[in-house]
Length: 480
Image 1 (spheres, one colour):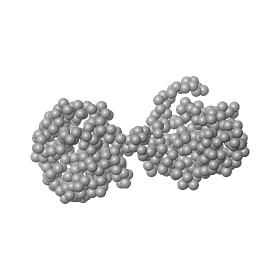
Image 2 (tube, rainbow, N blue to C red):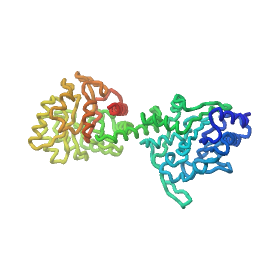
Image 3 (cartoon, rainbow, N blue to C red):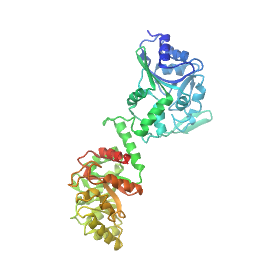
Image 4 (spheres, rainbow, N blue to C red):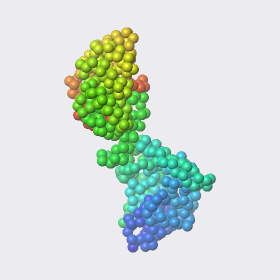
C-alpha cells in the first residue's frame, strides 16, 4: 500500500519543489494500491508545491480519478472553454484559467497551456505516456499544421452572456505522440522516476515546446504515424502534401495512368498524394484518344465527383486525328488538350480555336532545334501554342534537357513540365537520378514564379505509387 509520503518523496526526486506550477496527466491505477486513493495523490502534489505553487489538470471529459479529484476539490478553479478547459488549485490558478474562452486558439496564446509554459511550469505524466500530453497540442497550434481543422461552432455561457464560437487549428484524430518520448529523453530535458509501479515523467513546458517545435519545423509530419492502414494519419499526411503544393506558384497535376487503372483507384491515390488535379491519358489500359465519347464523359464526371479537377486530356500517339480528342474535350467540359507535336499542329490549333479549347504540344520525336523551329513557325503565323516540356523526351534523343534543350527558344512557350526522369537510353529513373536534369528545370521555373502545370507523369510508373512519387517530389523541392 503506497502512502502519501512515498508519493511526495518521488515527486521531489523527479524535480518538483515548493512554488512550482505543473500540469498533471495521470493514471491512478498505474501507481498500484494507494492509501486514500486519488485524493491522496492530489494532496501529495499540493504538499510538495505548497500554497505558493499551482496544480493544473486538463478537465474536459473524464480523464481519470486523479483529474476528477482535482476538479472536485473545494479550492479548484476551472477555465471556461467548452472543448479544452483545465482545472487548477493554488496561487496562480485564477491567472492561469482566466478568459480561456476568449483565446483565438484552444491551446496556444492566452490559454492555460501557454501561460503555464511561460511561467516556467512543468508537464508531469504520472503513469501515462505522451499520448495523454495535452501540451503537445500547443506545439501543433503554434506550427499551424495544415491537418488541424476548425471546430464546429459551440454555444456556451460566459460572464457576458451566451457566445457562439469555433476554434481553428484544433487537434484532430490519431497522432503518434508516443514517438516523441525518445526525443524528449535524448534531449536531457526530461526527468524520469518511478513512484510505486508508475513511471513518472517531468519536463518543463518551455523545454517541451522548444524541442517539439524544432522537430515540427524540420518535418511537419513529426507526430503522424507511418502505418499505411491508419486512415487518420494517411489523411493528415495528405493534408500536409496538399498544403505544401499550394505554397508553390506552379499547379500540380498527375497522370491518370500513374495514379491507377480504374477511376476509384485514381481518386484514392490522388487524395492520398494531396493532389487535386489529374491529366486523363489512359484508363484501364485504353488511351484516352480511343475512348468512346460517352465513356469519356462518364469518366470525367466520375473523377469530378471524386473531387478531382481534370486538368487536360492527353493523347499519347501521333497517328490520331487531333479534332476527335478536341471535340471529346468540348463534349465532357475539359478545357485543355495535350497533344504530341507533329506536322498537324496548325490543323489542331485551328480546331481548338473554333471549339474554345487550349492546346499544349509535347515533344516526342523531334529534337529541341526542330521543336523550337516548329513552334516559332506557328508563332509567326499568329498562333500561340503552349508547350509541354518533356525532359525525358529530349534525353532519349541524347540531349541535355536543361543545359541544351530548354535554351533553344523553348522557354517562352512552356506551360507544362512533365516531372519524370530517365537515362539517355530511355530507362526510367527516380527523380533527379537520371539524365533529364529535372531538378534544374524545376528550379529555373520556380525562379520565374512559373504558374503553369507540373505533371507527375506516367514515366514514373514502376518506380512506386503516386503517393510515393508525390513524397519524392516534395523531397526534391525541399532539397532545392
